[in-house]
Length: 240
Ligand code: MN
View 1 (tube, rainbow, N blue to C red):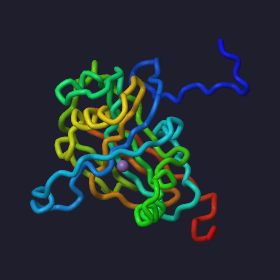
View 2 (view 1 turned 60 degrees about the vertical axis):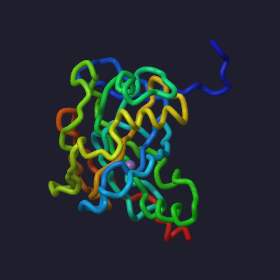
View 3 (view 1 turned 90 degrees about the vertical axis):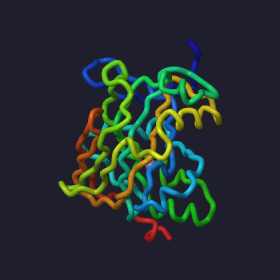
View 4 (view 1 turned 90 degrees about the horizontal axis):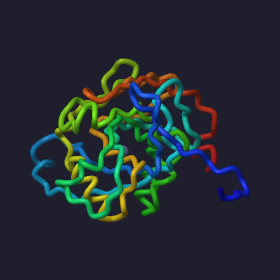
């Protein structure tokens, strides 16, 4: 045993549906735009841009249950429902046709976003961490093992706020399917067992208010309900 000067952290982890064991989280990758947000053939006829990814810290992942804190420094706190892929086997330069063999399971998660900070970062050419990597920014349902459900290629992905539908699409509508996302990320870094990938959100992202009740999920995988907590901290406007 190494002698640490402060207590080492236990890994963040996700519950597994109908099992007592947990899935340890190594890193969290998030894919940028991966559904067409602009309706119509014109958008779909334009060439697919290569995917891109950003990251969140592993301890941003929290169970998608109970109350989710309204974060500081925002007045434009937005939901993004996403398919979450849990990697169970290391691999670099993974070919798309081999990619699904690296998946341990799937979940439904939220890529919560401080939208005005993202807009400012885009405008200034700055990193997205301020907008994306805050505490509890990645609520996630229990994982469902591939052993139980295989590799879903379709299924509704949806999100309601206070029983009003905000987002609805289908896993079949990905611009870059899971196998391509895994192949792409693994060409940049070696994917490791324990990595999570948030795979992008369909159109309909919008702001949340304290007290809002989100019910969301992916048919055939999992669903969840969370409530947004009170605003406790000053907004960016107050800080400026
Ligand atoms: Mn997202």
